[in-house]
Length: 338
Image (cartoon, rainbow, N blue to C red; front, side, top):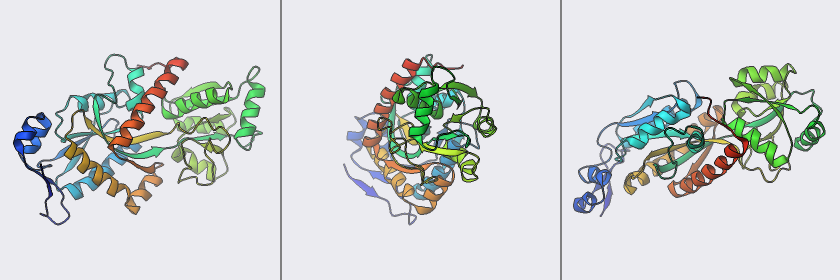
């Protein structure tokens, strides 16, 4: 088998595949590749949320950049519902030929524990292509709270656990901020009183008004209020500092070494059984896109820290995420609101 880059169209890059007999024996996706070059027609990129949100923004930016390098249109199709599950189901059911892809999020690894009717195994039912970004959350408190850092906050929380626990606003059942809050509570061995909100806007408003003590919103939602002094940032989730809040330490840096995760993320995946050549091409192009300074700036401006993991690295990450969040969701008895 040989793979030849096509030089037609200048920057256009496609796969020209030989040895059709070998591919025909390998399955339907490989057969499609053997019959021509990939891509030979437009690609559908499913986004599991309505237009206008962060997932949609990243999906459209990725689609634009892939269109430029692949020589075929990459068309975004918003298929919202059940925290991205509808789009995931459509992707899993699609032909493994590279023409239906999904811009997915952390819900890929949490939905199977929340939606029992149509669970999708994030490892077995999909092909990892590229991790693109992490989306850190940040612990924020009302500036009047007598806690300047994580150590002081946890000391205060422990002193009040049995009498008047600190109130913690959550937004979205099993959303990254909610799960990070549960993870913080368990790792620090403290007790918060969770207060559910339908969105970060009302939650942050109530924290600034002094009605609620703290929350873990996304960095992009909280940054304007942190910068204006209306909220105090304590620490961010994830294994490294947020590009949007570089002066705020991670939770691990701030003293809770057991907690170096808790961030949401975005990634490109396809149905199970995607041909290796398609995966390698798409992953390679994603890596180049994520190295583009203009793309990185746009990601950061939207609260997403650029990250690239290749297919093997992403597969391992997804497997770990699936296991760890499952353990937390079961222990905390978190269930779907649907």
